[in-house]
Amino acid sequence: MDRSAVSIEALQEYAGTTVALQGWLQNKRASKGLYFLVLRDGSGTVQCVVSQKEVDHEVWSVAMEATQESALWLKGTVVPHPRHQGVVELHVTGARLLSLAQGYPITPKAHGVEFLMDRRHLWLRSRRQWAVLRIRNRVIMSIHEFYQERGFVQMDAPILTGSAVEGTSTLFEIDYFGSPAYLTQSGQLHGEAMAMALGKIYTFGPTFRAEKSKTRRHLTEFWMIEPEMAFYDLDMNMDLAEDFIVRIVHDVLRDCETELEALGRKLTPLQSVQKPFPRLSYSEAVDLLQSAKTQDLLQDRIDSMRQEGAALKAEQEQIRKTLGHAKKWKRRRMDARKIEINHRLDEIEEELRNVPQWQASAAAFEWGRDFGGSDETVLTWHFDRPIIIHRYPAAVKAFYMKRDPEDDRLALGMDVLAPEGYGEIIGGGERATDLAFLQRQVDAHGLPREAFEWYFDLRRYGSVPHAGFGLGLERTVSWVCGLDHIRETIPFPRMLGRVYP
RNA sequence: UCCUCGGUAGCUCAAUGGUAGAGCAUGCGGCUGUUAACCGCAGGGUUGUAGGUUCGAGUCCUACCCGGGGAGCCA
Image 1: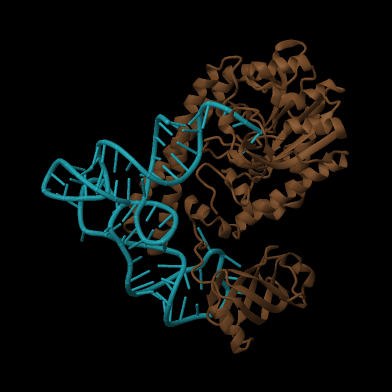
Image 2: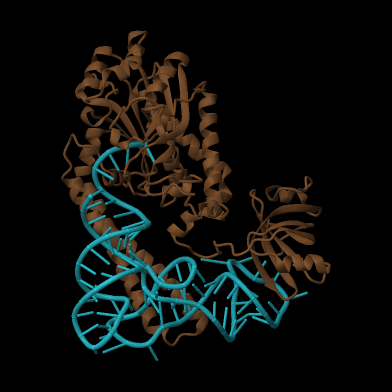
């Protein structure tokens, strides 16, 4: 341990001075008489140069022996990088090998999903994961700041619950001293009780869904933020959700430039996340889905996919012809390109299978059904920012939602759909306040009344209008980071068929 | 549960039914500013499993196992 060691993040401030660093060897490059050690300490990475002429034998052997992910202590002078402006490097004068790593499995090269997921505990060390998880941290801090600044009180709903609220098939059952209990699916109902006590509250906790779902949007364990506000109606709820999302994206853009760059995230779609978000009623959304405009949009998509596919196939053919009599270095580049083309062709093929189905399902969409994943994706393709869809058919929404006083078929629910096909990140609405109505709803959904007696009390003793929503943390981070899978947004994802490591 | 794509060297992937290959990683050698460094050499294989078709199977057929992402459901 060297308490005087400085953090790589702060290295700029030490330009011209001699400092000590401690961390792990991320990568090593060598030339005659020179080693370039890329050191990572969690806060960032820096290139450390070891010159054989300038160091004693011991330091040189450390550089020579150190392998990928070995732990190192390095001392040296902080100097500007000769080639990159605004970047510093360390000219090493002292080095100690703290721990020699042997055979680190994750090489600086491409790996498959399964291989990496089995080694998630090590995968976390890579630059891409570093960036995602730092953005996750930034998002979490923004969430707390946003609510705390507005006078919300953070309160936790229980994780163990006694009764099944929604379908038991999506609940994880555990043995609770001989009786069945469940891991929570939502803190919603308890959130309402807390809002009646403290006015404006938000929960921030883990949620569990035993859905047998294997898609890029699903985890069996994820974190949800659920604000619940007394004396809020649907419009106030939507206003809050809008401000909330704008704030999160704004903070990430301001504070995570390096991380977004490491992820290759396009900034334009994030920069256009400004108020107001388009608000469509369910009925308007259905109209849009069935419209010729949607058909055209999807047809354009199909056409451009076909074109890209044809161009790639032509390139592939060209490569196949020239590959035989190409120079070695060129052949290697062509091989890499060939693999890239194959991947993209797979994606295009899949999309060309999907989109015509989406086209058909959009055209044939019937009022009253809930939107499927593809319908949501199609809707968001029409806009450049998140959209809010409100006033859904009551039949497809939860029992506790308030009915629209102007149309009894509708519930005062709302969803926020993220752009770029990321889909639902928020679901919520205004809650029913009438005791008799709620009791009838519980019966109608085939739920046991006894389990909800405590909840009914909230309507017996000072029932007031109130509203709230739930934000899926991982889906939000996935969208902000521009990832193609939610599994990278949480340190140790739990999914269908995966509880290790 | 259904649909669909895949399983070849430690890793990522090639291979028109006809001699299983490349890059990376590893080891050795070279190179005084490298950026997934580069150059040279070397080792590394029961092509997921079990059957079948064929003169001949990584390639075709059947069943099963494992994985990817899509539907349903959802944040």
